Image (cartoon, rainbow, N blue to C red; front, side, top):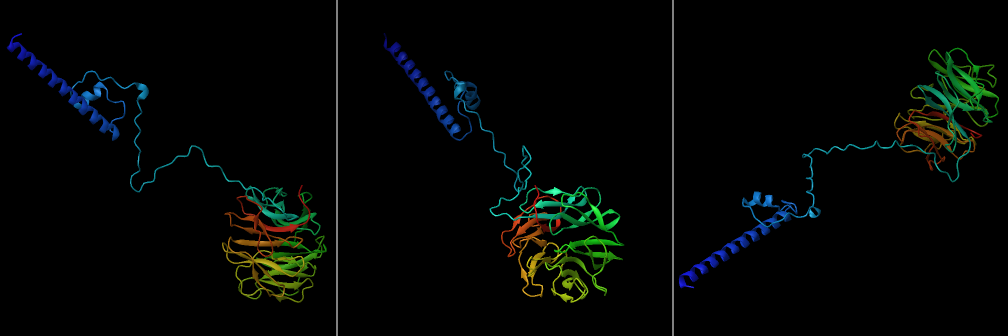
Length: 378
């Protein structure tokens, strides 16, 4: 081989080495660039196909195979952030369940039956419920309004007011709602009747000409007359356990209504409360005759109080929740009342000192005027 030929071959080898070195340098650059792109999530793994390299570098590179499909990771969808100050909308797949009310679980449940006014299909009706919150039943029907219920001493009958025959008359029915009959239907309207504990007499408010007065009659509805020979405005009466005294509300002293006590014979009128606003609804005697329970205050902030019949020892036993219309249990261990502390006017019970407040009902309508009797609903 001549020196010239040998020199040409050496130059050819050098060019080949330079070319191979250049290709290696390009491949190294591609690998580095691809690593940066993958690490920055600018290119997903497995995207270094021939086409991708051409698009990136504009130069076709032979000998690079695409990553197998089994190794390709999907590109994550971008997170859509809301505009500043705009809350993202959420569409629930199903409507949230409507909360239901369950009767309380008792260790030592109160006994007896509670009768009360309940809203049903656009009218006021009479309902009963066991004092432990079970077996709620509606015992009057129809389109007319019925209200102001109360039990007979033995719990066998319910007395109430209803306008089913025009004006509001007094009716008496069995405690299961059967056998309802008009007991008294004089002129005007009659409300808030209460049967004495000895079962002999009934006191009620008789309204005529827009004015209510205290009236009394025999248990069979006969001999109805005003309690006092003098004009005596009065409403919401309740018998004392001795069947001789009557507590009632009156504005006779001027200003807001206060609680008074009078003998059934019409004598010995005495004022019990003084200076309280918002006294409304029937007060209730404790079975031993030592206390009167009542509510006072404006709607939305009413509270329940106890006071001695002599007007002493005034005690507030609730605190918040808009509480009204208390009534003692026959054994004196509990008080039933109405409260809107859960959003609607429902029945609750508590101890006379205001403890152990327990919800009995959870209906959306306004329940009112509870009175407590003996017996049970089965």
